[in-house]
Length: 283
Image 1 (cartoon, rainbow, N blue to C red):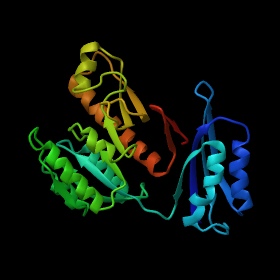
Image 2: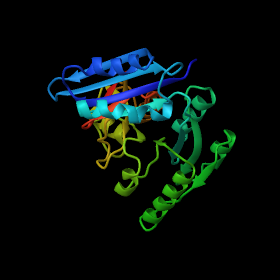
Image 3: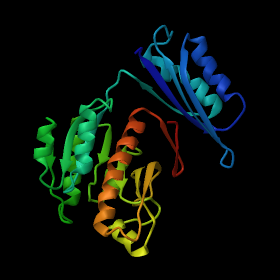
Image 4: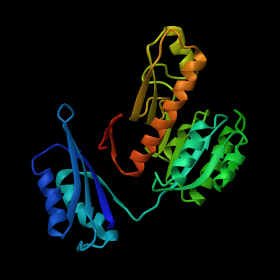
């Protein structure tokens, strides 16, 4: 496949946006492969994704962002530019439950993710799983007394390894605001319920007590507000009065694997744009 660039755009809605962006690509000998756009009429926000080929493009990849700045200023545009030859490094955080961690490692090994798993981090011993996939492992036990110090050390390790995305694969620790601030919209969590229902701990137990007919899983970005970050992906499964809590947990773990895998893939493919506490996903 030829090398491509993906341009993500967010700005106030106004006339001439699509023309201005596509003209910039065309006049520099670019060929648009995919383009998607969405306008939130109520909010007056325009969001778009353009993917274009770089072979024959008249601007070197490293200079495209600078050349776009005049267009961005004209339209009060926020933008990101990503290149297909870049392989981002990802850190997986996990606790006792292995199902999401193993699923992500298997997907990466199978080539589903264009990324390098740079490290597995856990507050419990999980080195055997990481070793099977030949991924470095770091063990950081967390207690209320050590949390601040351990998170600071985790951040040092992540920076030294060039980590760009953190995935919480059923990591059962609440990250501090200081930690989250270092990776805005670059920490993905899987919550084992169909948010905004049943936030917090033991959502399957909450769902069982309420007699729900659907359970779900939610992949979302982590923000300062627990389980309230912008939602990337969700899925549900039917349950009935015949299902025990154990049945719900079993069905829910299948959903968690699927939803987290989709959320990570969508982020790595640069198909998610956030605005406010919402996302637009061009899948």
